Image 1 (cartoon, rainbow, N blue to C red):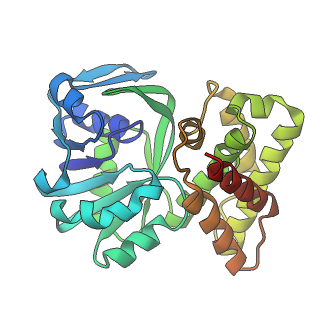
Image 2: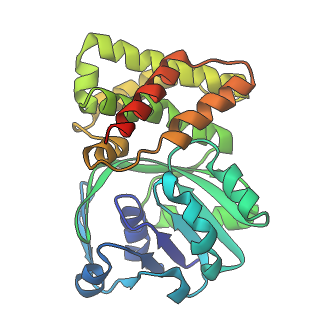
Length: 301
């Protein structure tokens, strides 16, 4: 497959960069650092081994890009309304669109816009950030779960094999399970680092907030179970806590958005999963309170 990355930041730059380093043809859509990357390439500073991509196939408009076998959508989910115009110029009849984004309901909404589209969910477990134009800092982890939403099996497995061949720890996970597994970490840590203006390590070092994080994780697991995802239980919450204990001190993407007074991904990270749980009679009171706090904080920019 050849690839097009929409959103060449902390996530798109890392996974697209790994695919390109492994020999795949990858085209990158950039905005603010388009000129820089076109001239100087893309630098990936990685705990798994740093590398530089000298000649990057960079674009600043999808209308100028060739059609592609696969699209990695790595935009913040609040910008998904732009996809209606961004992706048609690069779609072939059987293009696969991989949404490497946070939240619940993303694939449902995109499928309504493009009924015949082949869609895969990508759930990245990674600490990564864009620290300068054309420079990605990958601090730790880097695995990705792929959940097949509406893609033919042969294309899905070709995509999976490309990721594995690029040295990316990738695994096939049932679609809903993949989405809700990521929500178990995302919903507590993204919002709590904003609400308390802190980092992941400090949340877990304090006994009160450590317990609150665990309780919020169990709310997500309870919602997932109510919706039909039975693979999640308290052991998974314990695993996520232990994984975060072992991480470097980290500010999740929502905390970085807050720090720069950018819109936060509240709709798909909080509003949608809370609403989906409510449809099957499950309430998420602690996370509903956190959602309200985040909406207030964002309104004060």
